[in-house]
Image 1 (tube, rainbow, N blue to C red):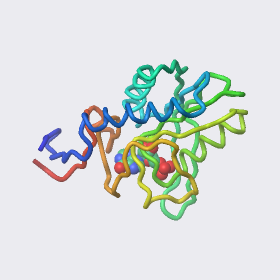
Image 2 (image 1 turned 90 degrees about the vertical axis):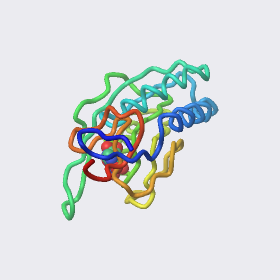
Image 3 (image 1 turned 45 degrees about the vertical axis):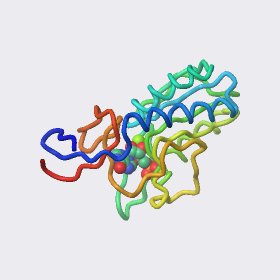
Image 4 (image 1 turned 120 degrees about the vertical axis):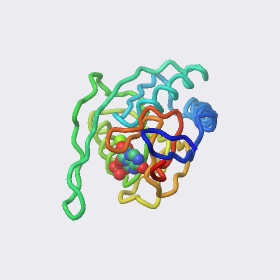
Amino acid sequence: MPVVRGKNIEPLYTARQINERNHQIAAEIAKGPADDLLVIAVLKGSFIFAADLIRALHDVGLAPEVEFITLSSYGTGTVSQGVRIVKDIDSDVKGRNVLLIDDILESGRTLKFAKELLYERGAAHVSLAVLLDKKVKRQEQLEADHVGFECPDYFVVGYGMDVAYAFRELPFVGVVTGDA
Ligand code: IMP
Ligand code: MG
């Protein structure tokens, strides 16, 4: 089992599995509304997934524009949770086909906020691609159009995702199982 920062990390999805899935998702995306596609990666967690997926989009013949938005949730527990824009995109989305890319769809708050924001700004169509879907945690009625893997309710790290700013660099998705 890989050991990083003195912790055992049990791989859940290997680099190879993720790579294969990314190419399948890209082929799905190419069949949807993909004309003049604008991809928006939701930072920070999606940066590696987005980087790989947009190259897979190139492989299936798409030439997307790429933008980034940084979103952050606030409020925990009994305090009602909201989402705020930490850093916005620069482009005008009016009339565009948009693909939002995120690492995990969990409660659905982040992507519901982002999707509604883009429609309010006049996007023609907004679809969602997520690497992982944790369905049991959903609080909002929202489904992704493209899902890498249905993820069990573990806290996962790697492939862009962190716990306390660590482990984003791992080329696979894993679970921290304890001290090595
Ligand atoms: P939600 O769908 O608004 O609840 O937001 C999900 C976001 O929470 C993801 O985009 C991640 O940034 C973060 N997140 C949720 N579960 C995990 C996890 O297991 N590992 C790392 N980050 C997570
Ligand atoms: Mg996130």
